[in-house]
Length: 371
Ligand SMILES: *Cc1c(COP(=O)(O)O)cnc(C)c1O
Image (cartoon, rainbow, N blue to C red; front, side, top):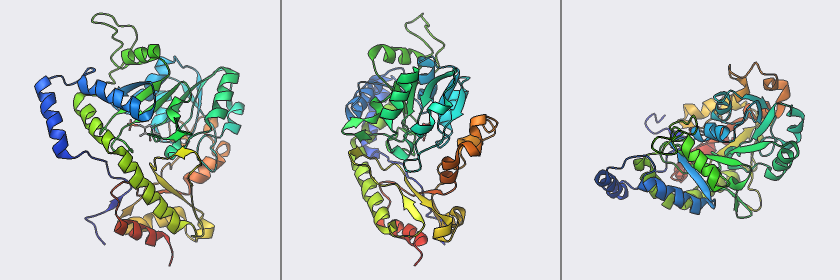
């Protein structure tokens, strides 16, 4: 057993160090380290271009854009969301004093099931917070038509959906706002970082006040803001990483295809395929284990892989709705969430990152394919 070289679920995309040094020297010379600096402005522009969006505000992580979006849209009461996500989605509601209402997910895409949303709407509902989980686009049209019918806002947690488009249109353009995470583990990273995408200039202005304590001028505070600013060092790092992200997504695509080709005939193992007209980013490679057909429970194969130094992750197990903060809610009851419960109990995300090599891929596949 090789203890020294574990294969982890992900490995961060790092810009070449020698290319980063001149940026650092420039920042040292300018002595402008944060507060909407030169590189911060550059990165906002570059990301708008790359992602095909008009209004984007950078943040110091991917959780503050969620919290700030809810503030900017003055969301209160109840918000309909998915239990099948990273905890930050629901925590952002809790931090705003909003009651999360969990709705079950679609068995194919693992995203919130639009068929289940209307039944969860009450007079207190003010918004829907769906997640493009694993980077697979939600049914944005259906969700919008429900939102329009009931006068609800829609905030997408697009933390997994960097660069994802449908018919060449960014998924970040759907709903009222979308949030991104640039955490080290994501497809594009600024070590820690994130962004909030909105629809118009006035809203961007408000978001920019909110992420800077509410300051609208030297002595004017217009809202109870927070400190969500991204610094110059990580902004410059982001500019460099953005140059190699297309290449990184292409490598991820090739790895996904290798996994799919090798696993397509394995009884009891399934995965999500590409969707026509979608540019995927291959952020994750989830497989779903049918214990009966595969002859082994998910956790059994998961821990067997760990014994061989292969560390997938059971994203998203346990469901957010099972954590102590949320499990008392009516909508958190497992009988309300049968599909999410089943998927959370069967998923393993396999290692997926651009420099995952063929030897490691073959090792992972051999562990899953019973020869
Ligand atoms: C990563 C992630 C976040 C939070 O992002 P941070 O940058 O880690 O704060 C939010 N939602 C989802 C779905 C995520 O995967």
